[in-house]
Length: 630
Ligand code: G6P
Image (cartoon, rainbow, N blue to C red):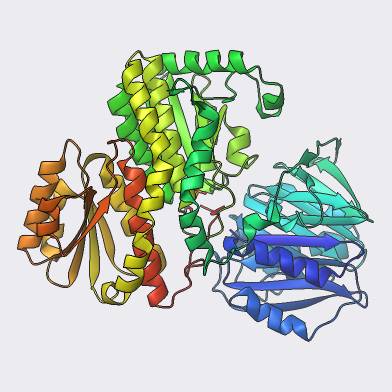
């Protein structure tokens, strides 16, 4: 959840590290720091709060060296203050760390008994002490020191270390969160994410778990944790810089909300035949043995293999966190109704510890925008131990750890998502869930071609329908000052719309820090009804579908208790208009695509309320986009 950047090369490390950290700030933004070589020593500058605080401090600093490391933090151990900010320095050793060292308390107390003095409350500082012991006290090189401490560390970590004794060297190692390296023209950049490397080179190497990278004089050598040299493949990345610019929008989140029509089109495009209006999931990769062979895939063979896997599926588990989990819940409704296969959806942090019974012939679908979420990755690894079960990943970040480790792969194709609260990745996932459900239904002979054509046509209509829905931007912009005065929001829907109610409530919590609950509308009388009074806003999702009348009855019950109702329905719905303080009309869509449209006004509501409260919409307090710790 923290962001790491290291640089060695001919340029000024300060500028490169700071622009790298800026692009990684989504990973954590409660404090930041750098250690850059100056007059033979690593000069450390750290600041509490956002990166701008560090930038202000660094304005006054200059460095004559050409090596440096930097870090933007999301606190796990120790509150976010300057002392706990990275880099941590012990004697000549400086390190930056992303992750958690689980056995830090016992190792720390052993070192303290030997006289080590710790300055911070972090688990990370321990690593600097351990390396220091080997490097300073036992005279080992930095590289050998790192190798010798690896067996002692338990937990998830990616770490970059430097030593003043040989300041031209850096050592990177990991077991868990990502570390990527790029080398070009005598420069080497190491970072937690591609964004920080792309300005230097588009050819990168992904460090795997239990691997160590030794960097010296613009060159990188890779080793196993036992010190055996490794030959690693370089991957070329397609990248355009405008993907990470706001392009005139006030915030990345608003830009990303408006990019959703394109995100849906891009998610659907590879898998839909525009002539026959049918679906075939392309290049899933079940037919090849391992991620690295995806390049050599035979398309027809892969279609056949996917169909074979889907035909054999008797049970489906969907595992994810946060917004991706709610996308998984929508998937449950789609798959059960279309394909008739039982589905269980779990948050990954529960799934991995609840001794889930996964029968043979199950398919496990893991959803993760970042492809790095620690709990989702752990769930995937657990499932992979069962030889009879296939894992299909749905990721936005290609070559992320979850993507690489799954048997089958689908891509959201949403483009880079910077706003911490996920928006476009969500609608891309809903689009893919539609396609997965249809493909499973076809494999099970549960979908006739006429219905398939209808579903595809409804999906293809979504991007232009979304353009119309985005007009609600103006409504929420002007209503935000009134809406922010409600004491709470209750979001409700039934059936496939229920997860969208949950997602709407999550967005308001994440961004506006307001009390919001998502509820199945039919469950309202079992508790939430007691919350309703004139200070409570009720957001009701009431599209024209099989549960319309029942949802309208729930709306009446809420209104009768004095709740202020904002209803979201299909077309010109006179009944809803009469019952509601505000009625928002969505284009008429199918039951499978209503969720894709309904979520847009809910995102805009949360965005504008948070904005009118002057909160940081792109980087809400206490959160991070890529959650690589448990
Ligand atoms: C964090 C983000 C959420 C995201 C969740 C799961 O909590 O703030 O926006 O939904 O992680 O992330 P993933 O990358 O696995 O989809």
